[in-house]
Amino acid sequence: MCTGCADSRVLANEIIGAALGEVFVHRNIANMVLHTDMSMLSVLDYAVNVLKVKHIIVCGHYGCGGVKAAMSNDHLGLIDNWIRHIKDVYRFHNEELDSIEDEGGRFDRFVEVNVIEQALDLAKTSIVQTAWSKNQSLQIHGWVYDIKDGLVQDLNVTIKDNNHL
Image (cartoon, rainbow, N blue to C red):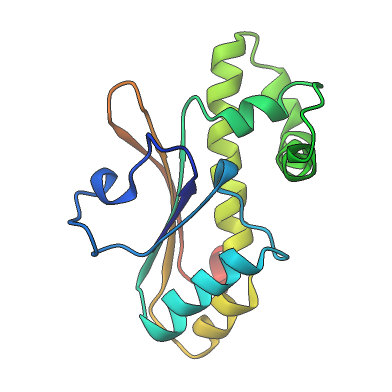
């Protein structure tokens, strides 16, 4: 399973080299994992409990518009409610992010820490927690895709049980 950004330039099956139909995908703005998002939870539940997936990839991408919007104080309308969660990620990592003087470098790192936080949030869902309590083999990985060159940056985030939270 892959949870990724709704950006049409990010095609999960192509990123991992899978044929159409080989990967179960959930997409939303900035690859967010929210415990109140019934769409994401439904996809996750089906993938974990019916398909018995062994790997879940949280895949962000450099240049993400949702993450970029969260870096600003602009008001964009309804999307502000969604972006509020991304702003929280910035708040959790503000010392590190604010220490990066180059705005492009800060933006790229914000994309990365957002993926890490979403992977951790995914691991904390009752669906994943229940699977692990039943000794189901399930790993969560954090990746970032670079639209410019098509390369995937593995963030070395692999969560495979409660001991890794």
